[in-house]
Each structure stands twice: as C-alpha cells, then as structure tokens.
Image: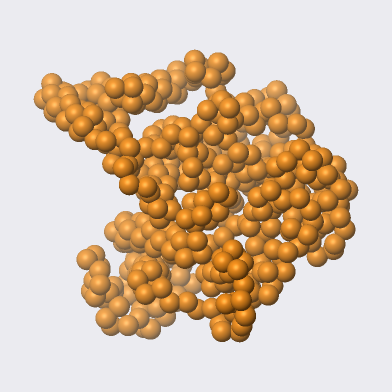
Length: 461
C-alpha cells in the first residue's frame, strides 16, 4: 500500500506543478525544503539578477552536457511487471484530476484503478530467480520505452520556448548534447563475476536492437505525418536518387507503406530509406544475438591464449568484444581500485594490442584514502605524456593540476537513493559542488529510488 501512496504523491506533485504553471509562481516541494523554478524563471533570474545576456545563456546551453548513467545495482529494485502496473495506476490517478471528467468516465477509472491495485497487491514484489545482467538491462531500458523516450523531447522543446521568451529565436542545435544517457548494465564487473565478455556483447547488441526498434516506429509515425509534396530542389534530387536505386522488395517486411512510395512524396521516400537502414540494423543485431558470430579479425587474437589464466583470458576477451562492436557502444573504461599510472597505461596498451580502432577513454577510480592522497602526483605524471593529455578525466582534487595542463574535467558523481549514498534533491547536490568543478558538464550515476524518478514522465525533467 505504501507504493500506492507514493504513486498518489507523484501524481499530486505533477498536478501542483501544472497549477503552478497556470499561476506563474514558484513551486515549493516540501520534501526538498527548497524552491524549484522552471526554465523560463531560471533564465530570467540569470538575466535580471546575475546580468547574464541571453546570448551567453544560449552559448552555455549549447556546450552543456549532463550524462545520466543508469546502473544495475539499485538500492531499491522493482520488477518490471510492477513498474508497468504502477504506470497504469499513475495514469488512472492523473485522469481523475481532470475537471471535465464525466460520472461514467469516473466510474470506469475507479474500476480500472481497483483492478490495477489488486493486481499489484497480488504480484510478488521480489523476483525469486536471480536476474541475469541481460534482465537488468531490459529493466533499465523499460524506463526509456515508457518515459524517457517521450520526456527528453518535451524537455528540449521547453528549453526552446524558455529561450524564445528571453529573446533568443534560434533553437538549441539538435546535435547539442544537453542530456545524454549511458549505462553500466552488462558492463560493470566490479564484484559481479556474472558479467562476462559474452554478456557485455549480448547487452550491447540488445540495446542496439531496442534503440533501432524505437526509432523504427518513430520514423513510421513521421511517414504518416510528412505527406507534403513541396520541398527544395536539393531534397527532391536526393529523394529521386533514393527512389530510383531502391530495391523493389525492400518494403515487403513492413505493415505500413509496404508498397513502393511514389516519388511525388519526397519526405516519405527519404524516411523510407531511413526505415530500411533501421530495419537492417535491428535484424543484424538479432542475427548476432542468435548465432554469436564474431567479426574480430584472426590476427587480433593471442596465439598463446590457452596458456593464460582464466582472469587474464576474461580481460583479453573483453577487449576483443570492444574491438568487435561499434565504437559508439562504449563510453569509457573505468578501472576500479586504481593505484598508479601503470593501471591506466596497461589498459591503453591492451586496447592497442587487441586492435581497438577507436580506443575508449580510460577513467581511473581512486577509492582508497592513500590512493586519493597520491592522486594529484599520479595524474600529473600521466598528464606529462603528450598523447594522453586529451584523453583523461580527473576528480575534484585535480582541478589545479588539470588547469595547469589544459585538461577539461567532467565530474562523475555516484548518487544512490538513500541519504548515505548521496540521495536528495539533485539541484542542491549540483549547487553544493566546489567552484570550478562543474564547467558545463556533469556525469552522475542514476540508481535506487533516483532511478525510479523516471517512472513518471512529468517528473523526469
């Protein structure tokens, strides 16, 4: 029943936010004991109180990056079956707030709400079989499918509207990484022996297949919307080339627009080509998951691999997976319990020997007190290597060293759901950081109850 109470509270917060928008006032969240202003009010305060020009705000936004890293070890784990039921309960509660609801509609919603609550109450909250890393990844991807996929575009449109209201007519560029998402699920080997190279490979392919599927259906929606025939000459020439070169049987797998798209509808022709590429990407990932074949060239393997110990073979296989998969599947190679510069350089060497075409960023994680105290000297030694200076990220104590060598820092903060793991309002955590430690970029783990914030679209961003 406490879950139902939490859901009702989330809907109430979203409702009060809408009321606040209508009244153009500040929204006070009692749970955070602070005042949360929306984007437009924040921009106006920057202009009015801090004398920042609209152009400065726009330039800062274009160069801002917030990287949210989903993890596989939340402090509060909820089954996907319950998450879906909670979503339907939340939808029923939100509809009951509508002022124009009819008695018949209210009765239907009450009955639906009762069904969902009873179903959730009779569902086991704990999965009795241990989840595999692939299961953890699917659970994390459910947040994208349910809320994040729709929430991010809405947030970006609100950013554009807020900029327009302070005099900036230009939109934030589509390739500006204001918000981006990463994942440790299927890749975090810290204390989890079940995460093997094969698991990492499967999770990457599964994520690529899920992403291409979501884009696939979004493109089909656009094909219905963009039925216009008028366009500029460049686009018309491109559409004609695609129409002429398109295979006759290319659309046989589709339910929508399965016949040849007429060249008089150039937008649909171009979107059809994008849809074909997404289909082939999805099918390629599905085939690789099914047969487990590898595209690693033979010379990338070690001839004496059978002589190595199991941990060594596991490490080498991991780098072979990195070499096999597309480079955009990975962000950084994080070294737990790092102690010296040799830890970082060893990873760099392994990437080179395993023929990783685009080497990953190597991030040392200094966790012991003695290692933390020795970190500035260790990183200074790394920064003295010319080829390494542009590849390193450091921590708070290294700001002065980073400035000395011209390295831009991105702070990576671990935030769990409880107070002990850094829970609490994120905006207060950002404001509490030391000066010069956040210069337009922030990386933070999303786990525990914080992770569940993405269960409600209105509370995501």
